[in-house]
Amino acid sequence: MKPLLLDTPPDEWSFEGTQAFRARQIREWVYEHGVLDFPEMTNLPANLRQDLENQWQIRPMEIARVQGSEDTTRKFLFRLHDGQLIESVLIPANPGSDGTRATRMTLCVSSQVGCALGCKFCASGLDGLKRNLSPGEIVGQVLLARIEAGRRIDNLVFMGMGEPLANLPNLLPALDTILSPDGLGIGARHITLSTSGLVPRILELARHPAQLRLAISLHGSDDRTRERIMPINDRYPIAELLKACETFVKERRKIITFEYILIRGINDDLGQASLLARQASKLRAKVNLIPYNQVDGLDWERPPLKHIEAFRKRVEKGGAKVTVRMEKGHDIDAACGQLRLRHAKEVSANQIPIK
Image (cartoon, rainbow, N blue to C red; front, side):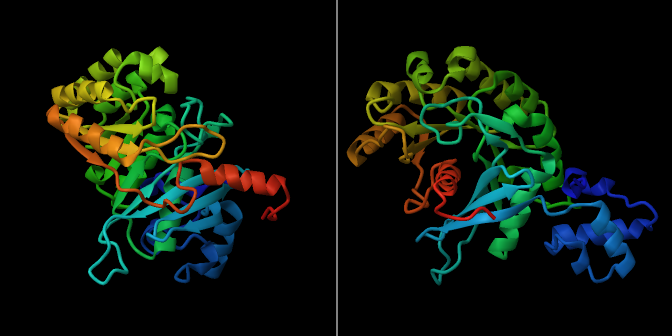
C-alpha cells in the first residue's frame, strides 16, 4: 500500500526530484482547496502528477454512508483503507438569520476504531478496540467533512469513537497539522479533547505547549457509581482524577469541563448532583449535562425531563456553572458508534452492498 501523505506534517513535505515550491503548491491544493487527488492539481506538470499518484495516497478514507438530521446535523461513516469503519459528526451551532445556515460548525472527531475502555453506556466499545487511527486518518476526517460542508469547520471536539488520550502518540502529530498555518489552521482554543480519565496522559497534556481545552467524561460523582458504568475508574479513582485535573488547571490556566451523561436510575439522583457541584466548584469547572442517547442493545434510559431539570438546578445551586446539552441529531444514529454498528449489521444481513 502506498504511504499516506497526510501522515506527514505539511511543513515536512518533500518530493524527490522536484523543486521545493512544488511541495507548497501541493499543500495549498490539499489544505486550502480540499483537493485530494493528484490528477486534479492542474498547476503541476502532468508527468509529476502521475509520478506522485504512483508514489503517494492522499485520500485517507472514503465516505461509506451519511445520515442527515432535521436539525442539519450530519453523521459520516468513513471506510478506511483496511475496511475498518469510523464515525464523525458535523454539528451546526445556531441557525443563521435566514434559518438555513449555522453561525458555527463543530466536528466531532474519532481517534480510534472502537474503544478498549468498555464504558457500559457507549456503543463505540461494544466490539472492543480494533486499532488506533494514524495522524492522517484523524486529519482526514476534518478535511473530508469540510469538503462535504462546503465551508470552514470552526470547532473540533475529540469526543467521537475511541479514547483520544490512549492514542496520544498519533493524536499530537495530527493536532500539529490541524493547528499549523500550513495545515488546517484551526486555533487551539477551538479544539477540545475529551478523556474518560487517563491520569498520566492528562498530566502529559498539561505540559503540551498548545492551549487545548480539556473535557472530562465524569458521569458519576463517587467511585461506586462511576465504577458501575466506567471500568477505568478502577484504575484511576475519582480522587486521583480530580487531582490530575487540578494540576492541568494550574499548569494551563484553562477552565475544564465535566461531561456528565444522565442515565435514569444510575447516576441521576440529587445526591450525585450535590457532589458534582462541589467537585466542579472547587476546580471552577463547567458542567455539561447530557441526557442519555438510547443505544440499540443497551437497556439504559434517559431520565424524565423533570428529573433532568431538578438535577441541573441542584448543581447550579451548589455554585457550579451548568448547561444541559441541546440534543442534536435525535432522529439519526446520534450516539457515538451506533451508525457503525447498524451498518455492520445491515451488511452482515446482506441488506446493503459492501462498497
